[in-house]
Length: 328
Image 1 (cartoon, one colour):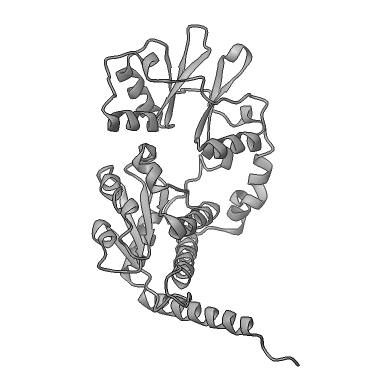
Image 2: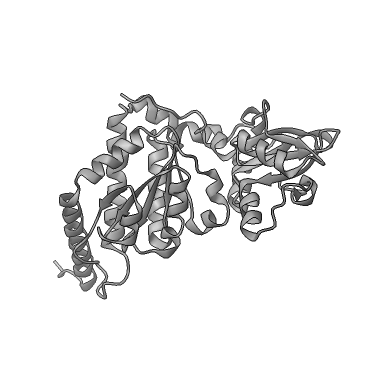
């Protein structure tokens, strides 16, 4: 039998390093992890994951795992959050911030604002005394002895550890909520979501009590309807019910930060004209593609003569709108 190649030896060394990292993180888990599970289990909103670079990629996977196991979650890019997307955050949400160093400027910059909005901040970090740990309500330490990268630079063992802690959170929450196999089959992307994406959007869209205002209405009234609608968008229609434009949470925040938001003017002056829109007969999969391509979470649905027929949210497509579990 031929000897083991150099590359197999390298692979084994990498895996050994990552196994050592996982063992170290396992032994570090303490009351912070327990508090994080309890905060997420009692959350009546959503778990919002944030991070950049490799931590951001890990965060997206954690958000997907939580969502498919009964804990509504989504990923918020911190840069997009700083430019308007924090309008989606509610005081009942829990934020999970991820950073190995705990000193990621893009993430730390938005944590005070997220806290001021009432969200509970949980951080998953490699350094207990980092700036992120100081800004958070709950800290989960996940410090690995070393990276598998021979230069100790590329995130390897640390990202594996963070990914594993995310799985540990998801499984702990499943047990906390008594999540059963029948629940998994109902919400898992391989089952009902695949069937859901084949449906036409008119069977998923909102048609009652939509956040809608007429052309010419004042910005102050439009923002009030936007806030009360809790969809992240208000549609603007003309006297015939035709879609004239939209105003999103992100639009309001960007205008406010730029110092150009004037509440005394007409909505016509600041709304987005000719916005992206879909048709009642479009499949949910087609609509989801449009949302992902344009980084949009809400779309107006228009029928004949461009009359507004409804509004569809990303969560409607993914079947997350009614995902709520009673606390045991």
